[in-house]
Length: 285
Image (cartoon, rainbow, N blue to C red):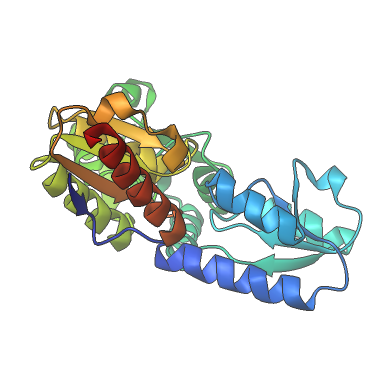
């Protein structure tokens, strides 16, 4: 069995930074350390940090004292104000690329542009961008949804979730440019790491018989990697661990490709490779 491994199979820069800062805080902590929701979208890594002492809270009401980690996806400025008013300390591990997007969203809103965010409305990063825009943004995740957008010759400013696919963004922009606006500013805020992972996964998927995408099921960038790979007609499986690999997937195959999401650590990649080798050897005996 030949394995083609993406060059981008490890944490991205933003996740590496978040992990390092949280590990340092856990080593020094004297009070509880909380994350409002999972600090990254990888349940196995979140579980690992839970054992080290990082608690995951579902709401601010669950936090009475200690430090709140602003997770890598960022949070709304309004939430930050509430936390500070409550006396709870903050540890900001927001991805620097998300920070840049928040800054753009805030600046557009202050200059009276209609802020349009291309992304998934329920994703925590998009929620933080809406908050940065003062709650007055229009969120769209597919071209058809633009039918609800009324610009009426207004000024428009467009940003995109950092983990969106470039092709999806371009399709929405093409439709958006047909709207009646007086001025439009377009920002490509897709993370460079995301683009590299997508291009690499696409290239591998074209040249293998089966594709494994490693990442949390809630990970937007991992789901998009899987969509990109499937678009080539390559059988693609989105998994979180090596134990999820089924022997039938590998039957009759001689070449498998592996791509990893931005919050997938190298140790999970190594685990999956070992599982493939074990299943392949078992089948041959």
